[in-house]
Image 1: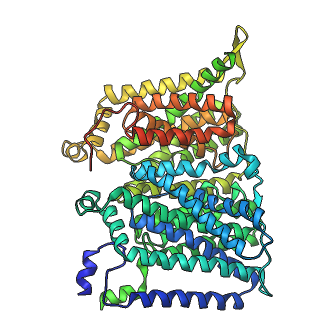
Image 2: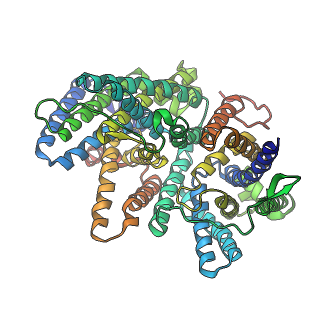
Length: 344
Length: 292
């Protein structure tokens, strides 16, 4: 039964198996993840906790992007710009609202998601009419335009200097890093749960149908453009949340924090993790934090300033090319348990 | 009025460079259905090589030649070592691999040369001649026009008048049939990439002196502008890409001149959106049968 169904939904997507209590499983994963994060924040030193928080913030974005690119076939190079939209919204709102309690942060983050959703809808409407390289080029232009917008409207965005994000101190005796990690992972786990449920349902099947064959999807009664725009909007909302959390982490926003390279890194992360797989999005987010840290520790010993930021760049690039040519399924396809199961 | 005339000539100068760069994109698109997103980074890499040779030997023209030759080599190597092995079942794969190359090239350039702007000298004066008190063109602008015109004419002759050009068009149009007829299709692809990368290098050498200088990211905006130029003209049309380049150059020049330089990238984005939504096949496309 389950074997037949898996063949029908070929590709990296989740197999449609109704006979397992998947709702319970997702809930357990989420609760387990939350417990693990809280435990880690008490076990790890502050800097590691901060890195853990960063993984959570990136996970929101990579999860949304992998659904868009892997499951719906739309490549976006503009997710860095969408993150910037979320981050700037938080900075501007916190400037007005901060000092009244923790609830203001929730309001700012929700507003950031809402605004990014609107921006995503605009880009998505254009994107739904575009294919392959045209879409990539358009979103690339969106990513490149961020510094130009911040300098054109410098009274609001303060040009290259950027804005600082005013935050209320964490409640009680919780340390700042721990609080940040909790916030980021709350966002990440909610995103993962929502996306997992979404891609498993009817909408997820429509996304994959559109990716695999637009004509067949349309003949089967799937609204191709509607599905594409909606997927882009969902993905943009995730990017807005991720950007908002990055702003909370860095406590400042500037165009330099959202360069074109960031958008390329995000694509790299989901490709290496495994396109279309939420587990792959997690591995991608881990890589986004781990590889620069690794490169930093390598270059620390030798006095080479030029290597510092550029070594991870080159490493990422080489990995991306090699993975694309050799193992297009990414890390998620290298799951040893799955390989064993297949042999058995 | 004086300002308008000056901006027009300035725009045509920029536009000529965008035209050359867009032409390089179109060359590869027509041959392989890949938009070479790494072309900006490749052009910067060859420009670094050229300026290293120039500063070592003191001769600009030696460096210029080295940059173009490096473009030929880099293009051929990229095709033979990387692009040939890309799985073409999804159009995303080529784009993603090209983006990986961007990261590699920018990372390696940053490691060798550092991430600060380096001056990029021009072989001719960039002071404009004045005609009746109106600043028109500089010697460098004339050099840009001449270089781009020579390249366009040479490419047109190559593709329409020579046997090898015919083989290149045949392998792009019908690879399997061409292979049966004895055309070395793989070799033609390599040659196409080499030519395109060399044209990209030329465009890089022409545009860098007018911008902030050499930097691993120096061509990012140029790439977006040129991609827009190629789309405006239609990715399938070589003539269109030249016209598109001039249109984008003029637009950028007027927008920076009248509204401020920071608005220019926004204008490019707006133009790209308008063209893609209005005439996705480019301004010069004939109406084609709609694919569902």
